[in-house]
Image (cartoon, rainbow, N blue to C red):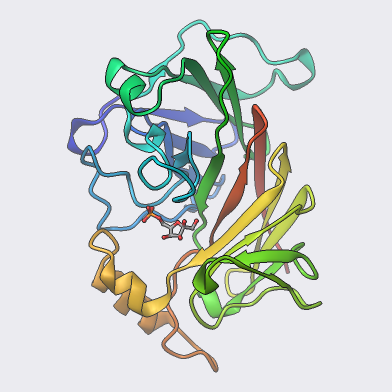
Length: 292
Ligand code: TA6
């Protein structure tokens, strides 16, 4: 069906009520709701939904280049191309056939071939499990015999109530490259991560399970991943948020309103998060649950 600005989108609905919304522009998940109808992903109210700019929020796909590590535009071009729906997708293995899913495909145009001369087919499967889990699987196939390298990430923006009330578990004691310090390598301390200023870190060799705990909403996101060794944690904080045209001052005020406790004034936003890697299969499963 049609989404914002007439852009095409697909809506997945699962029997118990959870849902996901996917824009063909960017192959981007822009909404994921649990069976109470609560939105779990963050999309900026200033997101433009206008090509050629990528949609600010949800789950942008960074490919064939993550970040600015290469000659392409930041995070590659997949997030601002129109993907197509595969109307005859290969089935799921029978063990997990009870999923609602859509397969999107991206093939390079002639123009893409000029900036990145490689032939490929990118299949992105977006599935909702019976419990409302969201599962993304990427398969990047070389369609000729010329080798290529790429980097890739699901650049997931999670919605949290108040960033100062959030903890991330699973990254403690790991090494990370700090983008705010010339990608210098440091080692994380022994405690779960908390947030009180701008963060932009790439954790290396992370475990397959990472958890995000939102104490105010009493919600845990559990991320399980495969073929995605690194994890990026980013929050622009107040100054950078203001400098982003598609991020919105009003959101920042709203954040201020909601901020409580010692980190008063900290942005309520997302932990933007996720994983980057170079193998040709990357699966991410995100589930969420309330805790008492
Ligand atoms: O993953 C973190 C990061 O690379 C940051 O350095 C930050 O600038 C961000 O992604 C957002 O990038 P974008 O191109 O979407 O503005």
